[in-house]
Length: 158
DNA sequence: GCCAACGTTGGC
DNA sequence: GCCAACGTTGGC
Image (cartoon, rainbow, N blue to C red):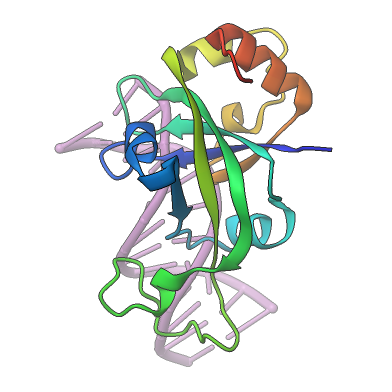
């Protein structure tokens, strides 16, 4: 059974439009440096899973579209690259500390499903994103929440 | 730009 | 293992 996720990104850093413009509309989701998120990328995010693309620190912040997992967890190459922004000298290629997945663009919503709107929506009361103090950049989304949000967005390929 | 809520680091 | 200091996230 396919699972659902929500991946956060600051659009000034990397946006859904950037993903759409990629060759084959696919990109390596690298740079995650949080152990909880790492565990999800390494162990639970599977090929074919669907992902909400969330723009944080944005106006407004919210879910802007859908991607799918094109490649399952593998060692994050940027952790070994001294020139990379998220280089980690303590990550050893023989025992990698950080993981990445590949995401493929699926769809961009007509508009942003804003965080404020999500908060007001029935059926999303338990959504992790809306939980106080929840800052994780990779989050699990339930099938029910996926359905509600895609419906709000008028998604065609949800 | 502010600041609350976390996560990480490092001294002890 | 504790905890203070510091860094980051991300809404507002």
